[in-house]
Length: 120
Image (cartoon, rainbow, N blue to C red):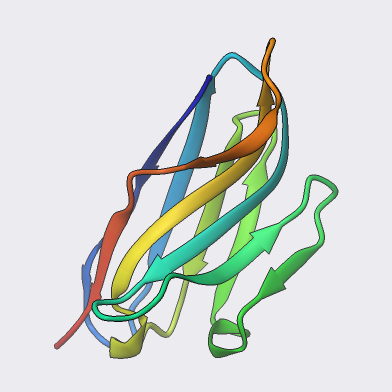
């Protein structure tokens, strides 16, 4: 199976920056797309940014120009650099990894979530 460990969340003032990390481990055969989602209180979970195995990226309109997703395939890790953070970015951020483990089918795995709070 595949395990995901997220880190990097915290409390930041408006205009500040944070960098989230999500490291995958376990009996990984191959990693495909890596995606960040977020869920604010009382709202549905939404896709924030995604990156394919080949490198193309996709962002929700509200974070374009402020957030950057990247991945280190050697470390099986995906990052989300978040700049110019605003209170509306406050949410629990989850990473999702599409992967195949040895002797297992391709499927999606979720991290435990990391809280990001933007407040003065």
